[in-house]
Structures are given as C-alpha cells and as structure tokens.
Image (cartoon, rainbow, N blue to C red; front, side, top):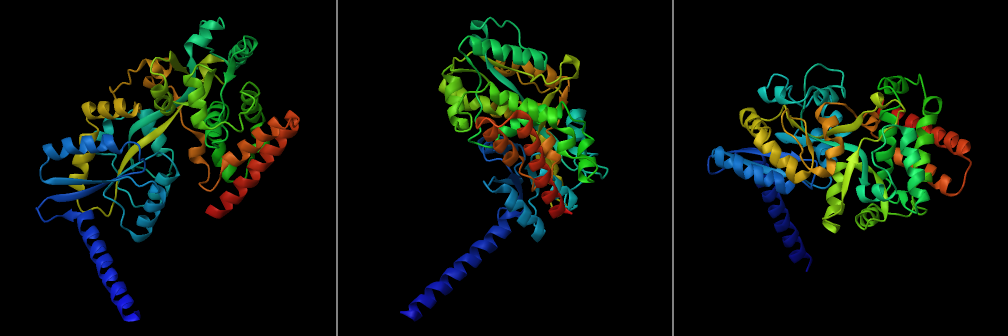
Length: 423
C-alpha cells in the first residue's frame, strides 16, 4: 500500500512540475505558434469581461501577439510574490494606491513618461500618480478614474421641497434636517461593511487637510489629534443623520434600501451605482459633490486613479507591451471601458455621459479633483478600525468631544505602529 502511495505521490509531482513548466513557458515569451505572448495582470476582478472584449479586438489587429489576462482575487498578494521572485507580469493594470507604490519603490517598473500615450492623459491624474513617489518619471499611465460624492434620490429631494443640491456644508446639514423633518432618512450608512466608512472620511479629509499633512505626519511633526478634530466631528455628524442601525447595515442592504426609495442620500462613489440600478432601473438619482467647506469655491471632487497601466522592467516584450497599452488607451477603446465599467476616464476627450453622474461630471472633466488621502497612509494602517469604533461610540451615546478625542488618539496609535513597521 505504501509503495502504491509513493508511486502516486511521485506521479503527482511530475504532473505539477510539468504544469509549472508549461505555465512558465506560456506566461511570457513566444508560444508554439510563433506568437509573442504577453501577460496583462489586473488588480480588479470586476473588469475582466471588458478586458477580454478589448483583448479580442487587439489580437485581431495584432495577429502576432497573444495576450493572457490574469485578474486573481488576491491580486496584491500575487504581485508582492512576483515582485519578490522578480517575475512581475509584462503589463499591469493597477490602482493608484499602496500596491502601485510598492511596485514603484522596488524600481521594478519602466518609466513611461516619453510614450506617446502618456501625453493623452489629463495632467491632474498624472500628478496623482507622480505624487505617490519622489522619483522623476511616470511609472504608470492613468486610465480609468472613480469619483466620490453623494448619490441622491431626486424624487425624495423634490418631495422635501429641495430644489437645488447643497453647495456648502451648512446647506448639506440644513437639507438633512429638512429631510428628517419630513420623515425621510437623510443618509444611509452601511458601516457593517467597514470599508464604506472611508468613503465619508476621505471626502471630508481631502477637502479639509492640506496634502502636505502626510509628509509631516510621517516625520511625527503632527498628529491626527492635533489636526483632525473638525474632520472627525463632520464624520460623526453624518452618522447623526443616518438610519438608526447604521452599524448593522451592510453595503448590499443600503443599495436595496436606496433602490426602494427608502433613503435620500448615500455617501460613496460612482462605483456604487451599478449595485442598485439593477434593483430599480427607473430610479431617479444623480450625484453631487460632497460640499465640505462653507466656501463653495474651495470644494473639490474626491477622485482617484482606479486603473493605471504599468510595464515591468523584466519584460522582454516591451514593444508588444507598448502596443497593448497604446491600443487600450485609444479613445474609442477607453470609451468602451468607461461605458461598461461606469468609470470616468483619465484620457483627454473621453467623457462619461450617464445622467446618473451628471451632477459631478463637469467637475471631473474640469479637473476640479483631489486625491484620496488614504492613498498616502502607510499600507498597514487600517483606518476603518478607527472609524467603525467612532461610529459605535456614537451609537452608544458617547459624548461627542470624548468620542473625537478617543478616536483620534486611536488613529495616532495605529498610524505610529504602521509607520514604524514600514521604516
């Protein structure tokens, strides 16, 4: 019996070795049909169908190149492993976040600044990429962007007698009070899914705290406690106008409630719209910029690079890599991506035309945007821990000032631990 088992184990090892060898062979390099094989690695799983459609078009136009798409659910972990083994994929579609900064800081990416397709991108989004590192050069070209704001039910606003969307924080809170007085839930918060807290925090912070703050904080020259009292106060004020069970409401439930017309507003981004429109295709909704300042001219749309293309230095097919990126960034192909993924574009002249985001489209097109602050936080900092605890404290009726002080102290403690780990 043991002998049979050993034979089976040995055969399994041969099969695995063969599979790995074949995988290595087809991942990059010429295949048996003489085509050049390149890999497109995406950190997002939800856009795979769109990439497959575009790849099919690319391969038809470039019959000597075959593109292998990979979009694993644990993309960040896979890329870190590839980085450690110096086997990064040829072309990578990444977000403008800590995964990208890890790749860039390792010096594993090519400088794309002089590529013709790089010049097609909007300067505001190129700056968002370059602001993530100190070196000169453009190590990823921005492609698709997202935008945060407030998604609102136009019919409920009309029912409450609100004819225009708020332009200042005071107007926003006044509208929330008015909606509440009419028996309408002003905000639906979904803090059971902790990531949704960041949609509120990022918009308030980006419009309240100078971008230079993070540099000082990393050097321990300032703290959350010293600078973010108003930010935390406004974060908690949103919860005070949310439904009573905001700590127990999930993201999916929030979308169901919004689709049914039970709530007036959700603080989140354009990426949430495809989650509720299938539930009610006739919903009369739009988005507006979340007004944080009481000076309308100071408010910006919090927007970030959702997809940027990078090319690995270790790639031996740079010409084919560049052809693929250039193809994806052609306006007609970027428009396909925009429409199917409901995104905004970082490419000049490519517009998002849906009426469901009409209230913020002009601001995005004008470049009146500001990046997500958490893109600059240490990767190990989980700010959602702070925000969900702050929300829970509020639900348990902790005094506002006490909650603000405890929450910001908590944020500083987590930041210090994360910052030390990354030094």
